[in-house]
Image 1 (cartoon, rainbow, N blue to C red):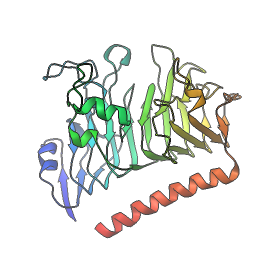
Image 2: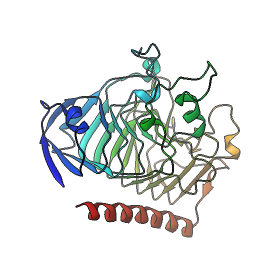
Image 3: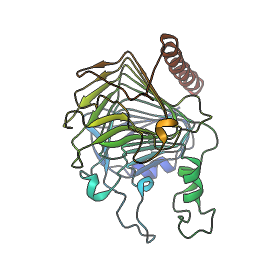
Image 4: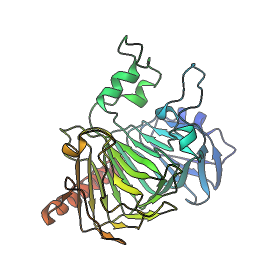
Length: 328
């Protein structure tokens, strides 16, 4: 295991690109104004302090790109991880745009890897803060340049960031994730344990925490366990726990606490779709500042189902621990 100690004066991307072995990188306190892509496997990045070790950039979806198009959601990331077995601890990742209504989506962290772990990190943006790959299949076709249809994009997202065969398992522990609209989205099997999901004020007057896009064959989607959904400035009752980005998006909420900004209906079906007939949203043992009245398609989890979700999280955690033990 190699060990590196870096400061904001270092060219972090250049150093990342040279890594060929399992490596732990310690980041000193300070602001790292970088747009970073972690391509190598088994890279662990540990900040000195989550409050004062900050990776920050400011791309946004409507920004003109040098290739003649716009950045689009998926090129706006501040930090992208495509290496397998990577992790982040004790730091903050920020996309510093502050009005998604004007600039569009602005991703802080994008993860496209089979196994990923994060602990004690802050993710800050407005719309689409955290992207958890894989992409929905239709977007892989759209963005890869596999079609001659001029309405589709011509391969402007690098293959490593777009395409990943198989599943992705991602774990987020004791993290704080800030946003307004769809600020956790994608298709990963992702576990959020003891995290704070902090919904800020959006000038459009509404908000959504999760926007899952899982395929029907995926048995496990997003699981929020022992999480606290915090009002960070949103209007009372204006935020939904989730809405399905694709038809069969899956979200489970177990032992979570809801602030007064969460709408009593809990879930939204996504505009004029019929996803209220297909989305897989469920909850159990919620604690709420306001009485809840979930939509009829939001299912109540049984005790056995809640236990199974927690077991699946521990299986994922054990898989991560075993992989790291082999490396270290």
